[in-house]
Image (cartoon, rainbow, N blue to C red; front, top):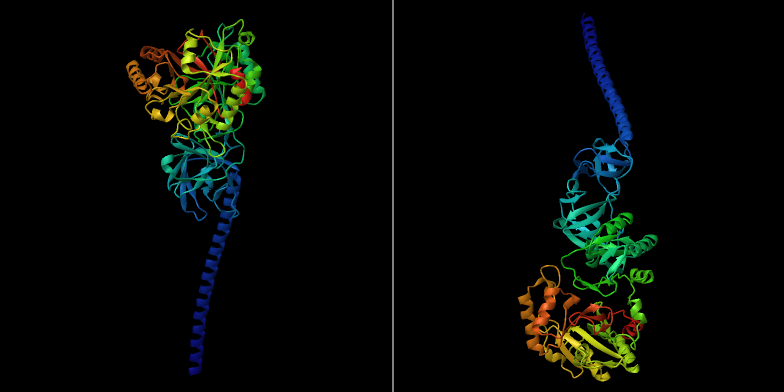
Length: 566
């Protein structure tokens, strides 16, 4: 009985275990099925995602809406504006729903971009060479694509600078040109971004007036201008504007070779038509703050100053050969045909007035100004004058000749020096006076009387005349102070210079710049003569208060000097 009862009990237990086992197996199969279904759906979902990512991928895309930039770990690293077009790459992880921004470690969500055929071209500065400088941004700096679109970077990044304009640094990023406000720049460091050779000089060429026919020297015929523009076009020169020139001079841009700045004072229909035909080569330039031009038929270099910019002046008699020399940056001395044919026996006597500025000893020191002259070259010029029996005039002799009181030998020359700066006085190099005394040759110094002690320049071979008392700067109007200041101010300053120097024989206009008011003030104070630039010989029929001179520059050759005085 007990055995039977025990067997029934064991069967009952076994039944319960079977039911439990069935339940466990059923639950297992249920979960296994659910898991399998989940995995199947995940695989299908991954396949669908990969298809979508593949379908949406294109190397060139545009941002659909303002969105975020991410790291590979999906940490937000920045922001990017709608409609900025970028180049992207597929990530090696095929189901990764983010595209890598090319040449960066940043990513954009695949649904936040749309395909485009090609990247837009916005870098119009094709003649600029990358500056050899990089800009390191501050955190949260904005890189502006235009005034509305930008990229914001939470971390600092370092980018190559293409150029600087005003308060903005223009940088290369994502094969585009972005601008960054200087307040977002942490540091600018030197870097070798380009080894391309840039322009080391620029020819500034000026046209006073353009007409079909010309009756005065400052006019250029339509035919001549078109011939000159055609030469520039055929030889792949490109035009820049005054703003670009200033930026180049200040080291804010690097320009490719064959840059040229053509300027006209007055606009007219002839010039407009030619400008349309030749892609606006000629700039119409009026008053430009901080710039003073000197018409001396010389090139400008990176050492030039905004208050004394050399430029070429096109005349009615400028030949295409001389124009080509100007474009190539050569010193050009132009003579009208009738002046070439004139002889002292039949024509009016002409005397060269030579204009120097600074002197230095190239074997011991340097001088970065274009108006510096190595004393070795100065000696060569004086040797030529001595060996060819030229008379170097005192200012009194020249004044008397101009006023018809005396006659002078055919081989006469007046040497003048402006300012009283580097190398001209005993206190600042003392190169000029010892050489004049050695050669026993005369010269005239136009001294800025309020800047240096006149006793530093005393010599029997150096006359001292006025170059103002304290008006050798650019004034508030953007031109020379003698143009900006009123008549009474000019008279007061000029009289101060006379009180220091003790002479009214001659005056020299700073920067060769003058107007009717300045000339009247010079005359009213009592100066007998006044000198400017001009690149031609002087003659008695010249206006006494606008006497032309030949400026001498660092690269003026001996042959050019001989041409001036001969």
